[in-house]
Amino acid sequence: MNNKARVTGIGGIFFKCDDPSKMKNWYADHLGFDTDEYGAVFKSKQLKDPTKSAYLQWSTFSKDSDHMKPSDKEFMINYRVNDIEGLLKKLNEKGIFALGEITVYDYGKFAHIMDPEGNKIELWEPIDEAFDKYYSEGNQD
Image (cartoon, rainbow, N blue to C red; front, side, top):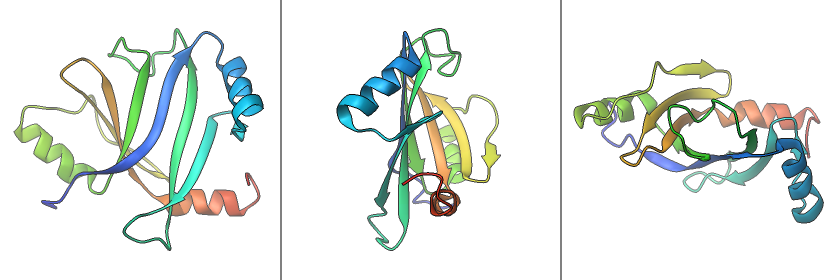
């Protein structure tokens, strides 16, 4: 296990709203967000290695979405982590357990936990190169 397993940054901001499409359009029209069907992606550079990209996903969800369950809150933060298995092991030792299993996609691994006030937290061990490839193929600016 990596004893340095930890959060390394923010990977996403997700919130519920009455009309997700209207809200995405408002952010696009008034704040210049470049939105797609999932919301907006913000590209930056990794602090420890500025030659590598980092991405943050911003997404709206409908009020009746189950995406934040079992939390009853209107939002969820996604945190970038450097070693999801190691971090979950450290959390388990402190009595904090994942909600379900780790899920794996071509852009990284995901797990969910709850904080003491019932906020669902998404942990993401990203594969930023998958986004680099997607955006270099002209899918977004």
